Length: 85
Image (tube, rainbow, N blue to C red; front, side, top):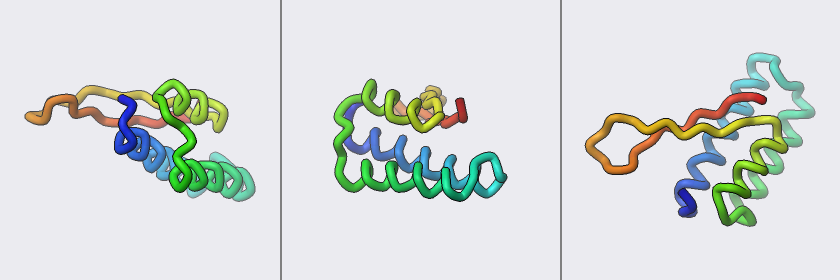
C-alpha cells in the first residue's frame, strides 16, 4: 500500500477523524487546527512516500491507522479505520 492514491485516502480519513474528535470535544480547537494544518501540508506537498512513514506521521498525531480487508468483487479492496491512540 504505497501508491499516492492510497496514502491520500488515509490522509483524508485522518482529517475526517480529526473533525469528528473536535466536534465531539475529544480534542481542543487549538489541537484540531494544529493537526489539520500538518495533514493539509502533507496532502498538498506529499513528503510521505511510504506506508511506514505514514504510520509514523499518524502516530505522532496520536492516531493509529488500520486497514481492514472487505468482502468485495474488487481485488484488494479495504476499509481504512483511524483510531485515537
